[in-house]
Length: 339
Ligand code: ADP
Ligand code: MG
Image 1 (cartoon, rainbow, N blue to C red):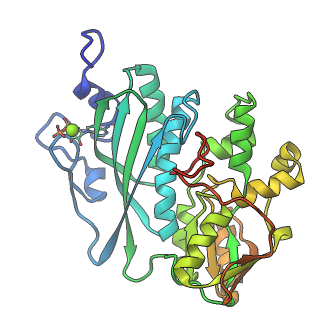
Image 2: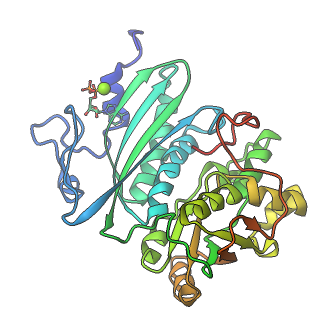
Image 3: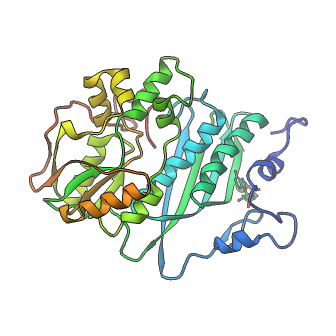
């Protein structure tokens, strides 16, 4: 960032990534709303000083998003900002955690202020929706656009949703349609550039299930967010819980737009292996089904039961050859991965 005409690192931070710091230049670096958010000292010093709620546990997670690996570089800057935070928030949702603070490490190939403004708009828009504050970060110049976000959330003692609590007999359920994001990515590759197209929007602007997870965390035995594809993530849940699963392929919730776009067979394959959906996959005692469904529907969401947890290991009920997403896997071919 040495070009005299372009703003330097500090000016970029001040312009785009200190939007909630009302008194950044005074000695009082914390606004009243920040104080409420537990920020003792915000941006502008070497570290942020944060004050977690007494008696609660911190949930911490980090994800990197790379241009043309995790998102198409020609997507709008606003969508890229939204998505980079959304995939991190989804990890908090997967634990039932309440979002509190995040830090952002950005590597930029060049300084494009119009791009930065759009990126910040997408980022802050989602941050405000979920009440999470940007408290620090870093900006560097590098060859490829890279966005690393670390999120911090809070959970009550012993109420985090983990992957290890699923029991044989539990229902398996998801909070929304599957495969739509994969359909959106395929549509993007086929030239669809309308970001409001329902499938493209599912891919570029996932909605992390934060409120949903917080409202049901006491009622589910296990859960995680579906980032790598249903089969891959169900495999993680089963491995951690020491159980197996039987799926009902006819019960998988598919968006009509996905079936129309890919046909039934490929839509099902996308639902099983597509990835990037960021819905929650939950295991719950059948006695909890009605209460969980009601809690989700109150929030405008849904519960789709798609199978059961079994004591026999392995996943039965669906025929699929895919293995979901893994970096470094032989099938790794660029955009379409989840972090
Ligand atoms: P240092 O050199 O001590 O690491 P920096 O000069 O990188 O500090 O950053 C100055 C301040 O601005 C720090 O408080 C830092 O957390 C914040 N900051 C830097 N980059 C970002 C960013 N991309 N988003 C939010 N805050 C940032
Ligand atoms: Mg720094």
